[in-house]
Structures are given as C-alpha cells and as structure tokens.
Image (cartoon, rainbow, N blue to C red; front, side):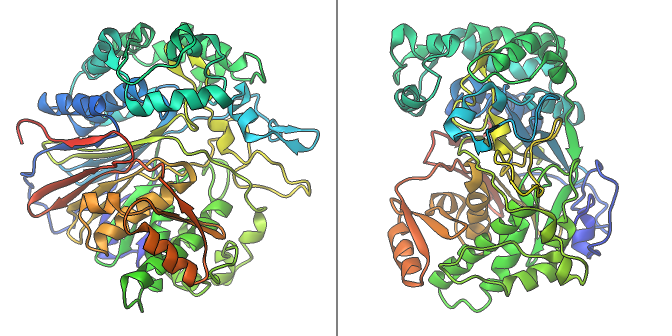
Length: 585
C-alpha cells in the first residue's frame, strides 16, 4: 500500500513521496495528467440516508438539477428534524465532496469548537473525573455548533440551487408535521429514565407532551425549527451565529445544572475549515478520506494493515482474523496520536507511510493482549514519537448519522454529522437540540502532568471518529462512497464496507448487512444477531480473542458503489433509511 498526504490525488495515481506537502485547502484531483478530455457521466444519481424524509429531500434537490451538496444539505436539515437523536444544526459534521468535472476532492470540516472559557479539567472535581452521564447532560459539554457554517462553506463552493431553496423541504415538513418513526419513539421512554430530556422544560414539552413520550405514528410539528431555518434561508448564517438564536444557544448552555461557559461571542467567532483530503492506495485503488480531527486516516491504516496481515489467509476465517488485528493496531495508534491538527503536531504522514504500516503489521498482538500504540519515530530512526503523549482516556458515545449522495452529473458527497450522544446534551434552543461534543475530549486529566493529544483547550476541536470516505480506481474513476455513525465504532463500521466490497466481493447491501466486528483494545465485539455473526464469534473465541457478543449494533452505514451496470446503493437496516434515485435516472 502506497500513500502520501496530498491535495492532488494525481500524485497517488502516479506515485509520490511521503514527504511531499502540497498547500492545505486546495482540492484533490484523481485524474491522470494524460486524461485531459472531458468526461461524460451516464450513471444517474442516487441518495441514501437514515430516514425516508431526508432521502426524499435529497431527491427533490437532484430532480431540480441540484448538486450533490445541495441534496446533502437539504437531507441533513431534514434529519435534524426527524432524527434529532442523531444530528442537527445544534451539532457539527464533516463533508467530503467530489467534483466529477475536474475530478477534485474537497474536505469541508464543521466540527464543534471548545468555548473560550473551557479548561482542561472542567470535567474533573477534586481530582475525580465526572461520570459520563453527568458530563453528557451538562452545559459544559456544549461546544460551538458548526453544521450551519459547514452548509454555507460547502454551498458557496459547490452549490447550484439558490441557498434559500435547499431549506424548503425541512421548513415544509416542520410546519406541516411529520409522522414520528418507531426509532425516535423507542428512544424516548429510555431517555426519560437517565437523561434530562423529559425534565428540561423545552424538550419535555416537545418530546413528552402532557407528560407522555411521543409514540410511533404521532404527527409532530416544530414551528420553532421552521422559523429558525426560514431565518437562515433568508438572512444567511449570520442569523444563526449572531443575535437571538446565538443568544438562545448560549443561555441554554449556561443553564443549570452544571452550566457551561459558552457565550454568544464564542458562537459569533466560529469559522468552518477546509482541510486536506488524505488518500492511500489499497492495491490498485485509492481510498480518499477526511484528515484530522476526523479519524479518516484510520481507514487507510486499517486497509494497509489488513493487506499485510491477510497476505497468507487461506479462508474467510483467516481474513476476518486479519481484519480484527488490523483494527486493533490502527485503533491503538488513532487513540494515541489523533486530535486537532491546528493545536497539536500529529505524525500523520508517518502513521500512514507504507513503510510504517508494513512494520506495524509485524507487531500483531496476541489475541488476548491489550494493543499499545506503535512508535513511528523509532521506525524512521528518529526520537520516540509515542513518548510525547500519555495514554488516551477519551470515551466517545455512539450517536451520529451518515448520508451518501451522487448527483446526475457524477458529483458525490459523503457526509457524517452529529450531536454526539443520543439527543446531544438534551438542551434546546430555537427548535433544535444542542450537542454534547466536549465529552469527545479526554475528560480525565493525567495526575502526573503528562500531555494528552485530545485534551480540552479553548478554541480546540475534539477528535472525532467520523470517517466519510470515497474510493477511486487506478484511472481516477469513482468506485465507492461510504461512511457511518456509531461513536468509537465508526472506524470499524466503515472499514467493514471497504474490505467487504473491495476484498470480500460483497455487494453494497451485503457489505452493510454483514455482521459488525469492532476490535478496539483487548475486546472484540461481534454482532451475533446477523448471519454469520455467531460463527464468526465462535471462531474468534477458538483463536483466543476476548469476544463480547453483541445483539445489535448502532451502525448507520449508507453507501453507494459505482460499477459497470450503474449505481449499487445500500441503506443500513439497523436504522430507518432507504436508497432512492431521481425520476430522471
């Protein structure tokens, strides 16, 4: 596996040095230098997301001639309404965009940011870290939302439809009402038992009218959300980041119990970022993904390690074991080194270097051992890199949503967005929930004074497991769009689709349906209620792995595979999504 951190994917097709550093913020091109003739896309469009209303919004934009970015924004604005437990405009997200005309890739980052008043020990009391449940529901957990700024940044660069038009489906649905889905309804009784969702006045009135949780089939309207989106549509994002809406967000974050420090000034100061796209070769393909603070790099690491570890595999059981160990090695490195690239020096170039990955594959841990991070500094005959950071203490909840879109002109979007844990912080402002993204930082401060790569610092973005990714063939043609929610399990979920489609020969839906296998640390979690999950779990136990059987997983994989026949889409049956195509297809 050959790779470099590059903003011109051309270098990955022709070969490049790991030390090359194109200027950040530029776009990536998967086109070869010899291919200068215009290309024609004839495979039509497709959208797949976690809720039918969101997919309908995306298709509406595509049928109007919209760009994949227009469709993605429209879909996500709807998801914030119909799937509020997973994402919304009170959170953030990552969007990987492919422009077919010009073969350019751009990574738009809208990650939440720590307030100016945040401190490294704000989740500590008398030297003891707050329990996650308490921290999760606190105002301290609320970061500056980035989703709306992400919309604007992506639309300014790629959008074709008028800004105001892409919010119409969500405004219409919020005004006229939508039918509460079983998944949303099923969450509410459980949330009432251990969160503030049924106690905070605004969320109680919305989700528990008359003191009872909403039920599947109920008609739910959100005129407050419609009013907020209408202002954003007409006035631009300043309506969100300044004035009444920003003040409402700050007030909700500062409210007791455990009020935070988020201010309207913090919100007004927010800026989205366009970051480098990172790519790595997997055999004759290129995996392109989002750079830190995302965990897209873990996809390149897992694929490269898997290629080495599966070289001698003689059957599918051996390949599964190789996939498990590739995850264990990559997770250990990701956990130790990844954070906000504007704040810390991440040795990403070394971690993704094929020389390092080949060496790292030789450090395959015994099945029952607890994997530790590698040391790329020593591999390249330099000072130790691992010793710069203390062992990671981050705990990341399993929330989030993912959508994939290809438009009628071949442009594509892989977008993952979140409010962090289910229903975010359970705090409400202007018709939407606020994130609890600050709990994505390491909440426990080392007592010995050692540094953490993912420590809380004012203005810092927390590390994310989100990994929106795309795959291209050796001539630069789009092969796959993939991504998933799922907290710390996201790298494993997404890698399953990459390996499943690219090595195991599975269709898009079969790859999504395949049992999830998550190997982070000394435990391997295997989804046994999906065939052949139980046999996989049994085989791994026989090999000596510490297996924890899981009866269901929180993935929400929504992928599109491009093949000779056209587009092969998949929606994760573990959620409520679907795949659809425009009528013009």
